[in-house]
Length: 64
Image (spheres, rainbow, N blue to C red):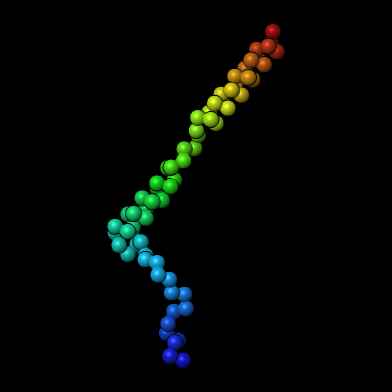
């Protein structure tokens, strides 16, 4: 019965909101992960450009 006041799920993680430096590091870490991968890279742009060029050539041949 003496163990009733002990929390069952005790974790050894520190709260980043408790310290300003830790909170800033936490926020900056999230931003670094979000900006690390570009949304449109060169390969995707080349494939889309090639498809547009191919469609334009086919349309030009069809008109003639």
